[in-house]
Length: 71
Image (tube, rainbow, N blue to C red; front, side, top):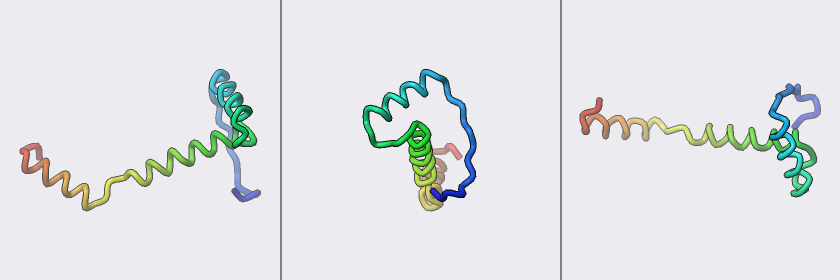
């Protein structure tokens, strides 16, 4: 992360924050709850991007649905 990267604030329920804080303290992997949340969001969003179906796969599914009479 660049030092000049603009930041935004996100609110989460207090109980979720406390669970995240306890996790951070117990694991020692992350320096803060913010760092944990940023990591998890990046992971989730990256998975979303990579799980998008390719055009080839999409066409194969459409073809299969046509043969089954759904399209």
